[in-house]
Amino acid sequence: MIKLRSSGLAPVIGAALLATAGGAQVSAHITAATGPGLDDATRAAFLDRAAEIAEDEQFTLDEMVENNRGIADSELTEQEWCLANAIYFEARGESLEGQLAVADVVINRTESERYPDNWCDVIKQKAQFSFVQNRRFPRITEMKPWDTAKAVAQVAIDDAYEVVRGEVLWYHADYVNPHWAPAFNEVAKVGTHIFYQS
Image (tube, rainbow, N blue to C red; front, side):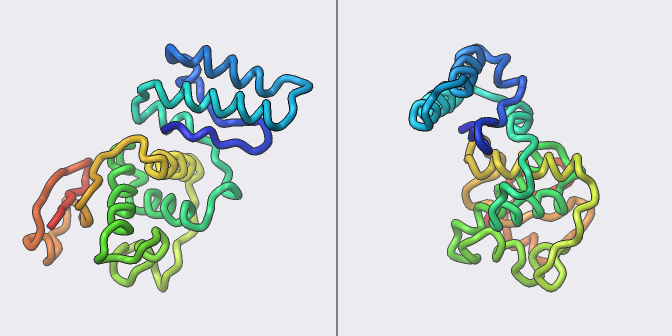
């Protein structure tokens, strides 16, 4: 699902979305919704219809990420912030699929009885993610990868595209050999990360 994030009347819809077969319809609905003289209910109805049209389209992961770029930090909830940090620090040098796979593991863990039930607690759990120190995240220094991480997080949150969902709860970089890996079943390699389920 493409989530039309908006502050006021400025939903984030990328050029890729507007170039699709249904993009002209979405564009028309957004234009109508931002026209003068509309009450809030009518405007909301137009935006809802634009979202429905967008949902009917099939998008590539690249397009979905592009459509979610530009999310302001202030728009993120605490949980969204944590998920985006995990993507940024664990996989910012990876492909979009590699970044999304990391997000998938975090989400999978929250749905498993083995781990905490929210993203922040999963990520900050002791000895699980090496970038976390004393339940704190390092400072973000690269804005373009951070923007990508936030966009990838939104795709994962919207459940719009999956790489390793379900029981895939563990991964490691291919240049290390953690002692726990032989106890699990390898299911995928995405970029430099190897993913496992029990």
